[in-house]
Image 1 (cartoon, rainbow, N blue to C red):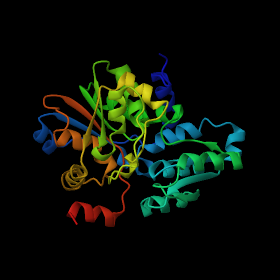
Image 2 (cartoon, rainbow, N blue to C red):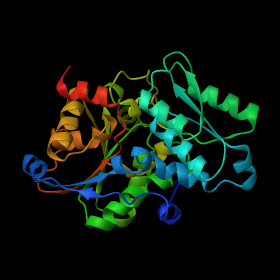
Image 3 (cartoon, one colour):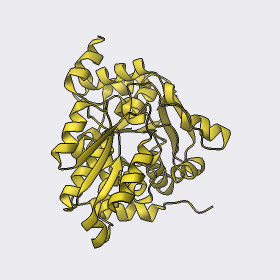
Image 4 (spheres, helix red, strand yellow):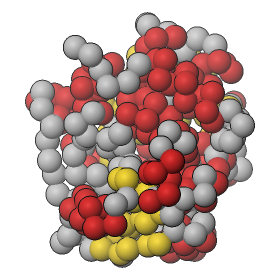
Length: 321
């Protein structure tokens, strides 16, 4: 079966991003290694532009627009990080942007998206379909729709996370990646399996929203209600038509973690590594640190996907209130 993206797509994306995206640092922690018995390498995409890996896929996709597409503009839907990524990318490439965002999206993500110059259209994530709203506005205004994960250029851009990680630290036994709709893990698995065929690629979802885990086990895309989880970036209801076959072919397993494990991992990052990481960004690390994924004796790459969280909310969560 021919998959939607190849390693060459990821490599090409890396060239487009070279002078625009940050090459984020890879950090280690003696405490984390002692706790797990493994060598953990944290790829810190919380330090990426807009505070999350999403900038990679958004900029890669928009940079490939035709002159006419750039003139008309882009529309996207997102709970926050893809929104900011599209908004900033559109600003850098001098094109209009419209973003469909849930009413309950974190205030800082709404403010940042507007701050990059995008028009924001709000909707109720529990009663309305962002896909339907996005398609309707795209049709009415002649905009090009770039979804948050189910887009080949987005997937390829996200895969540059794993490409850089492996270039920087060498061989890995395991690569652990958070999973929402599957764009990040699809791109990362494409890069990792090409460079390190023996590397195990494991996805991590919130326990309340394990649609990808179920989909892979049942052999078809499973649709679920909007999951109730603090990991707002992983409140997706189903995998993508493009991401699912890549995950079927290249992802070895998907595990889940609870919200309280995410909070504990946020606290670990803040106290031990001096990093602010949002709940979704803690998914992969939580699985390694709390034992959902056995990693002892292995070299493990961990994608820390983002750090966009309101500080009042962050303080309340880590304080346990």
